[in-house]
Image 1 (cartoon, one colour):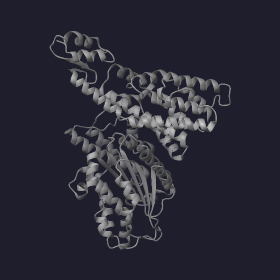
Image 2 (cartoon, helix red, strand yellow):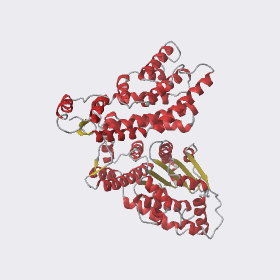
Image 3 (cartoon, helix red, strand yellow):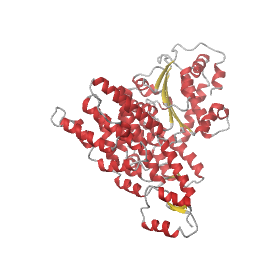
Image 4 (tube, one colour):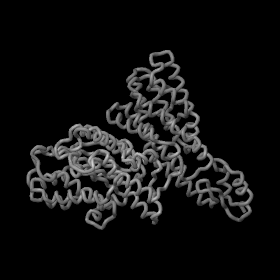
Length: 559
């Protein structure tokens, strides 16, 4: 006999199964079988009504993770609309429209209106006009994808942002090409995945839903950066747009909407080998820095203790919920310094403490109340690079003493920690929950030939970071970065810092990313990327701290 609960579910279901055989079994076979089973598209099997209700709860919890980002987007829509209205002294760029209730038809209407107004004006045929016209070319696939989003304001959040940004571009020249270029790429990405959009429309697989959520969240973040740039016009958000456009260019719909892939242990090891990753060398760097730091004189120890006590440093390290970057300038006269750097000792100690927390070691650091709080909230990952251990003017492999080698090392370290922890959770050595499908074939080929592209190495690290859970913490420590701020290495270092500070400044909704960089002297051009809303610069006394008897104790008990 068919249960009332089962009948209610079938009546309330949004759509019928795409397969007629499944529909027949639900209506004819299952009714007389004495069971209350219904077909679950997410698991592709017949399950109880209770089980499918649980699946619905899991789905609702997944999409609820985007609520904070969505609320931020709606708030920015209101702020930008008011600012543009006030600045023009005229009507709003989108008069009479409720941006919280926009649909894709209104976006198309805005595109058409803007195109018509520009058809006989000075902006006709301009690059910006061409970008605007591109927005309509992938309209059908993008609208189909929007229809797949859950009920509520998920789709209207995207459509409202598109409508406002296009309307702003129509009236204000400061809406730069970078904003519109990023906007145009979003529908094009979905258009490249229209076959997978169709599959998801027919089969609500858990894995496909997760990928749909991932791309929705990525689009929200991109739109937030665009609106913040329109609102503030700051260099920080202009840099974020550059990085975001790079990421959007690298996205492929097949990989975003396709089933997430699990890499074999062999694939991960192969990538680590091509990155020239050596875990023993990384551990050796940290140990060497600790040993040399232990030889500091009293003045050096006092300076290290001064950094540990600095309020800015303590706030930065103890806040495990907010991403950001911190540059520490020691302000010492580089021409007269000798011996190990006090900042290097603190950096090495910090790496050791974070590793203990991440590995769950039974140590003083892991037993500390704050460390336990981090461990409970999520996993802690730490990657580091001590430039003084890889000085550019030293002998040996030039790759290991370059910005490319720096990024390869960071990716190798993160990959190793992800591999170890996820493999342990799965309880198998055969596969690892690390998706390497985004690594292009020609990237593998180039690395095998010993050719390394800094941009691709940076994107590799950023994409691996994106696979961490929102509750995870990633600490990235770069010691003595000013050593690479010279000669032919300068442009590479600046590119690395630009991308990493942007990563730490745009991690909303993702893991907590902390970037700590140190300079025994003063950062030159490298310091510009830390002078932002999410970045801080800590200036220590270059003359050296006053000698204190407690310095050695403070260093030993650093938390």
